[in-house]
Image (cartoon, rainbow, N blue to C red; front, side):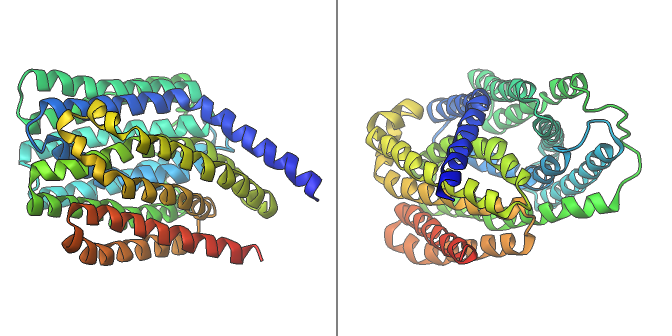
Length: 419
């Protein structure tokens, strides 16, 4: 048995690394775009501009989490083994369109009632979010079909248009609200090349947007949507409320220090998440029903990532004195005092994602939601204790403790399941 396991482990690692390199261009483009955008707002926007950008992106995430982290994750799973243009293929795409439309309608209704934006800005925001969601759905179809080159091209366009438009708007001295909407609408413009790429790949053949909707497909994708609801309620909404609280309590300039650390984390989290969603998750989903093979794959990737992540995050910590001024602005160098707990929490968070991806691949909705809910409750409890005692640093130590406990719990569950 050992002689069979070692080659299988090596093969899994080679496949993961080859896939990671294949997705590297798309990941690099997105990372560079995010870094440029952060630098623009840290340097040229008024004090608190970096936090305003993050809050606007969080608002975008509140409306796109259900499609991106729910519908599209399930779509990749169910489209991957199907022939593009076939009857079942069209049914899955139709179900995804229905669920995305319902999610966006719900989100825009909440936004209109909340009064967070003016009516004009709400309409423009809705237009941009709809277009961004449409291109994300088409990107999921490209990914499921293995059209990595087209997917990379779309990612490069998305990464370039948003920051480029924001740079022009900032240079023109536009109000910050207008700059942020310009950034969103420029990203939404990638819907047009996405349509061209998917049509050229033959993925839209015989598609009938107003055709029959399959209740079974809607229910199957709905289970992934429920997982995304937990991410929305116990992740994005908590982050949005925390940022608003920090702004009101500590003011824009001090909160920018916390936000600089969080933004740095967002950049490499985006890279890691892109690799895991485009390489690890599709392979794990393909192993559904093959318990032994799936466990070997998970163990081999977990062993690889534990050391690689520790090394990478350690390098970031060692280079913090030049990274923070380089990526943001010299005034944000003071954020280096906040970096250690963020990096510790991210190491634990990334490793715990391996377990969460397993639940997603197995469509174990109840357990996934329970884990997210418990994690959020623990985080809020930790914040109530650590924020008054340690200020901004308390938010980061609460985050580190949250994911440390989550990783410990995930490890115990995995060990029990393998006994």
